[in-house]
Image (tube, rainbow, N blue to C red; front, side, top):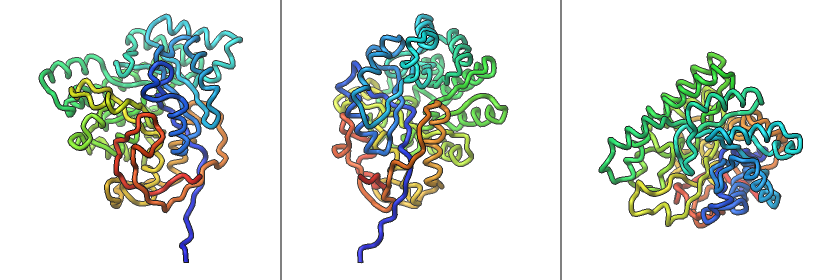
Length: 386
């Protein structure tokens, strides 16, 4: 007798942090390929970051993205507006106040601020950040923030001169950098009343600051990324530059703190920071010159389902040290991002999942244009059906 298959249902998931690479960087990925990957991973809404070429820091750039997205039918694409200079804040004001732009404004899910450079070099002047957050508070917009401190990173990079291995990447963007940037952001939120959202939080210290701020009723939410939940700096020897991202891989203690933050509710969302690059780019002979970022939209759900099934994903399934339920996945990957970004998505069940199916992640079988994954060869349990 064939055993009965165990299934579960979830709403189409929301990934509030992706880089679709269109326009300008379509050799890495594009809206069609990356949303196809998202859909295969159970994600039906994605929120695209502004560091494309040209960057989404003007109404015209946002209009171009929205026009390109019109051809995508199965996945809803929303967009963040980037601000790095005073003129970009003026463009944001235009977007929010011109009645003729109301339809376009509805495609904008929030403002993105980089407190230090990452891919695309869109660091904001700290002196302008307060003005931007004041405007976000007035408009009821969420400010999603890449939290690293530029001065601390610069000093760390100087101290690492002569280092050649990819492991130095974590040394050059140390935990203290994220902690200082989150502290700065929370202080501005207290002053302006803006809703701030540190994204891809990676350290125990930063998460502790967010936990304390929530207890003080500061308007803060946050997300963590799957690569920080499932990988650590101990994986550099096997991954090489395929494990290079910003913020970088951290310690096992930091990883455990993120899972604790999920358990106690400090972490509001899990978002992929899906950031495809070609294998040729990632395998730069100089590891520290390889671009930062990893793909993740197609692998997030199976990784989380594996933990929900009581296993830890990897080359062999092991008992998981952490607890996670399907209700947690719904909360972290649908309910909370839907509420935080005011997306207005229906919670009607759109995904049927075979919770028993065990399979092996292979980059060449995934749908992202980049064709690779940091989880190559990992066994997982749970797959979207149909």
